[in-house]
Amino acid sequence: MQTKSWTMPGLLFLFLILSIVLSTAIGASGLSLLDLDPETIHMLLFDVRLPRVLAALLVGAGLAVAGAAMQGLFKNSMADPYIIGTSSGGALGASIAIVLFMGFALPVFAFIGATASTVLVYLISRRNGRVAVETLLLSGIAVSMFLSALLSFIMFMSGKSLHQIMFWLMGGFWNISWGDVWVGALILPACLVLFLFARDLNVISIGEEDAVHLGVDVEKVKFALLLLSSFITGIAVSVAGSIGFIGLIVPHLMRILVGPDHRLLIPSAMMAGAALLMWADTLVRILPTEIPVGIVTSFFGAPFFIYLLRSRTRA
Image (cartoon, rainbow, N blue to C red; front, side, top):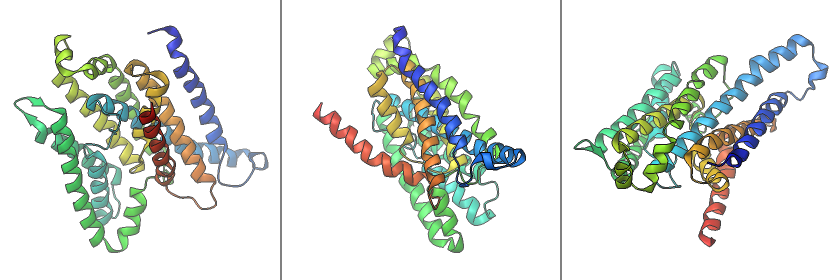
């Protein structure tokens, strides 16, 4: 790689630092920090805003990196972290926690659901020690639809818990605490480990047979990428619910800006995803009535993705 190729990740890093500062300074209280006493400012910044900003950073970074890995693995820019049923599994786990245990240990149930659904898809797809990407994709769709049916049944039978389930499914950071931030921090080492597979992803994107000839153990790399992506997505879903389009749009956009080399794409997507979700959450905080951040990402993400698709078709 040329040194100048790191210009965009460098700019994204500076933008990310600036975004952290501004997102922490902007709040929904409607009060100027200059009008508050030091104790209140400390509580507002470090107990309310900063955990929320950091959680959005971690979730956004994780979803974008997992999306980049899934798009590279499936060799399809339409893939996202939820493509193999991770989101549906997490939503089902969270709904069970809400209906049966009144929300107790909800993040744990969501993570178990997300991870279990991925393991199930992998086991269904595995034949003679190999996992065909096409089978993995179709199995993911089938399992996702089955889990969605179970989720619909639980929602139908949930009674007064339906509103809580719906609110969680739309994704948000309104109840974030430092405990959630520490859980979300597990995303960072997983992203770094996934980055170590950037070269292998580059080789696999050429073709699996070529990758084998170049010395890449394709099946082990696939398993590692699925495991890491599912772990990252499971943590993200357990912290903030199902937030769409970050893992789909950001890698796609970064691929246009920095190219397909995953050694550049993964860190760029990580920083862009973090900044995008931070600003989306900042936007919902300053609205007259706060809404789930998943609505904002979908509201802007869907039209933008259509624009990218049409631009790509014209090219």
